[in-house]
Image (tube, rainbow, N blue to C red):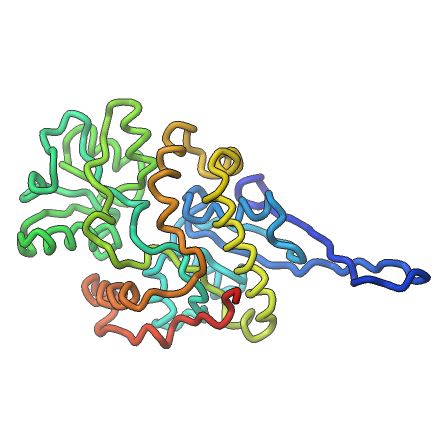
Amino acid sequence: MTDISRRTALILGASGIAALSAPRIARAATKLRVAKANPHAISFAPVDVGLAKGFFPGLDIEVIDFAGSAPAMQGLVSGAADMYLGGGTDIAFEVKGVPITAVAELAGPPLLLCIIVPWDSPIKSTDDLKGKVFQVSSKGSTTDWLVKKLAETKGWGPDGITTVALGGQLPAQVAALKTHQVDAIVGTASLAFQLEEKKEGRMLIPTASYVKDFLLHAIFATNSLLARDPNTVRAFLKGWFQSVAFMRAHRDETLKIILPVTQVDAYAEGKEYDLVMPMFSADGKFDAKSLDVMAQSFVDLKILDTKPDMAKWVTEKYLPS
């Protein structure tokens, strides 16, 4: 168990105001296993901030890191985790039968993701991207959809941009960019800023500049936990949104807490923080228009044959009042 992949906070609550003649009896904290789809993404760092600041009283939280949605789903199905911090597109797994429910919007517009071009690229604006080659993690991925959405927005048609799938390995993506095997990639803001420091790449635009309505990330709970202990879900969500509020109000302290988690240098993480904090939901309520865009993306990506009724797959009943 490492400090990054397993972080446990144990906060014991008193049994209440006892009579003077009676001893205080400490109640054991409730064990809660929270899975991350990515161990280093700033998107999921509010749980680490909450643990550091004591925003989860009464919960003994173990953070479990997964490298992507697919292994996370396997872990949730096998009972390895109780709650999950993942992508909005993971609602499709729910539709397909994974026993989880989206209980809160985590982040809306895709400020975390951006279009990155080589440092010495002649590309100066989105208009220069017509006919260019983009690297995406895989066909049918969110990054693939964001590229196709750009072509659609610009009116270039389905062949206006070419995408090639080189996998999700960061070194391969960076190598393809630096050697001009591709003209652009869709990556995280922190990656763009790190490449900027080295004069190897630069951010052209955040994808949120042309995709306004989106559900980038959501918080999920297993259906077994919802049936067994809904109050634990409520307690976690209360602490989560306290953490988000703290992060917004305390930039420097937040960066000190999350730098060991995100493993990004201070310069790049500071710039990423400034860019992406507005994407975090303050209350967890789902935006209807964003849900509709997400539902259509499932069809566009050929994940599902038809648009699902998203109201069946998300709930706000566990959010703090």
